[in-house]
Image (tube, rainbow, N blue to C red; front, side):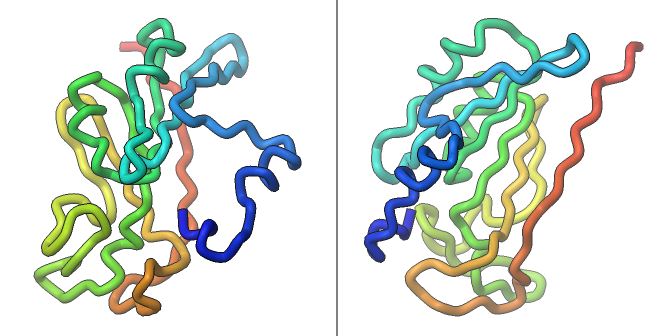
Length: 158
């Protein structure tokens, strides 16, 4: 989302490389006869996020994973009973104090509710990755840069 300030045309570069951008869209991923839905929503801070548009394309209740720029969509994801939300945007809070956590996060202000890590409510899990960079403030304190690896496994029959 900060690429626009540099003139870097991220969307065009990704499209040229064959990457499918999921702006308010869903894709069915099939493997060994099983499938799940990967959905993406645009940045809500630009007023363009539309989870309902993505859900209309995911036409059943197979596992649904939402790729979201911002964790602010979590309440709506809970309401829609999504299985997993993968978010970023907060940079892990950038400045974290022991026993307090993040001081501020973009779009949430002081002492943010969702800044980093694992969150669970109902059937909806959210993971917020701290990422590699910073926002407009070029500092990170007590939050290491990270690239996360998430392994998905099928639910065992009961």
